[in-house]
Length: 296
Image (cartoon, rainbow, N blue to C red; front, side, top):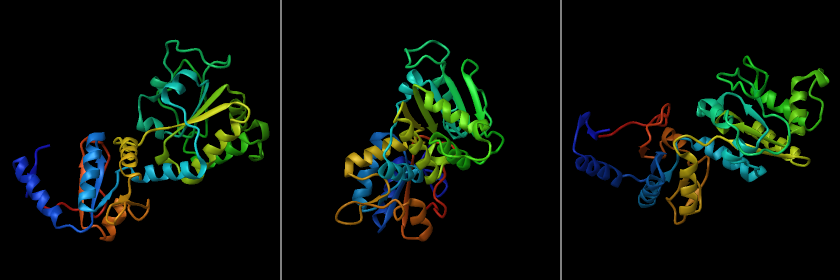
């Protein structure tokens, strides 16, 4: 995209000079968006330190929630390759994973024969929630709760069924009880989900299910990566300053607070007096925080 100033095209040097002048007058800027590669993240962190501002990613809420769950519950993650090659039962939680990665089914369930898998049962896909689109035809498919069912409730009921606690009046006829039995008898079960689509209780339940299953068999989770290289930027921030995004460099040492230093909150409240929005990846559907305006 060509640089613009006052609605018209300008030379890059002129635009950069004007941006530097504006940022030189700020007291508490936010370096946001951060939809960029690792080199871009390193540069953004250096800018935030120099300006004594805050860094936050466009997917900061999703990243913060995932980090909190990790701190409080731990995790048993599986890699994408391991899920593709080794898992015999895969639970897809809602439509979020497919919206994030439309080719997910083709990647997880290749038609060609892959590496040897544990156990002797055929691969099975279980969809929890929304109706399935473009489902693979070469794997056994089970759908539970399609047609707009409440996803958090389905997750809670499945968690109870996995732990062999009562889940309602349907008993063994409940499809969730049958899904739970499939998970308990799997050689390697993986639950696939998108953190952005689930609240904390649902995420806690998923991790508790995996922990319960792992007592007798092997189970793991596969959380879809945050958009815009969010996970990469978050890791870059961690190894650069010791803290994830939503960190302030205004004090003598970096300070992290997932609520206080959210870009959207800082802009809406007026605490931040400038926003540098970085989007080098042209991610669709990503918007600047509400209340942000452009100055030229």
